[in-house]
Length: 319
Ligand code: R5P
Image (cartoon, helix red, strand yellow):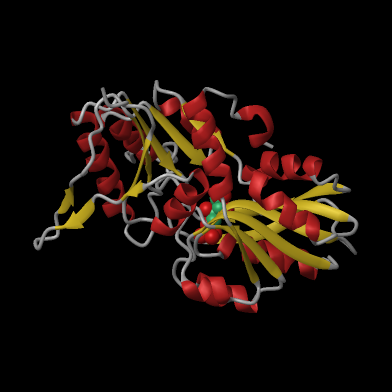
């Protein structure tokens, strides 16, 4: 009788390179079941038996087509569920809408919660993310949600820069816990916080205002979960440099580079941006002399392998 062992890897169109890199590390075949009908509708067809299999679907829900990529994910989960897979794991390296995690004004949705529920209700038994915007989002669903930290991938590169009198800075008050975590792991001299005032009536607009902590003469590492317009981190970096830092670098997990963010990188006082490939990295970004791209493929491959074998994820992987 044929054996039905072994898990299956699937991906949509959001970041096939990352999915291929993960599959290569795991020495597994990667299925790419998405095509598009002439009217724009998504078609999913999986050419493998999935009955009683564990299926990992790798799909960040990111720009440039965040809503299409969410729809691809939902339809892949539905196809896998109806094909009688025994477990469906949605590996979502960047979770789109995760910044909309609470009602910050009346009559708005909690979009991250709505999307997480949709993923779970369609059939996912587990979600895996990297540096989700707010860890309490794990509570939006009843199923397990493993959030990994990109620090596992970023730290070796940061350490190789031999930064002196290191201060780890957060570009806003929401990132203080992250900055404190990096400061500990890097044995930094201290932390600094740039206090940012955001106008909630204007989409994406932000301003740096005051700084808490000593940055004079220090090598400063700004850490953040994502760069979108670039406003937050670039304003903070410029401000820190004006306040007398010796150097300013940034380590950012998710690079979206929307609008004119990419041009702002060139003109910013931040001398290096260390980013990851949770979101597909455009060629111009890879080639930019201020940008270093670190892959999270080894981290995600390890996580998939441990979920499959029933080993701990927090041991060594979550730094
Ligand atoms: C804010 O809470 C986030 O952690 C990021 O700092 C922010 O969303 C980045 O957005 P932008 O690059 O558009 O300022």
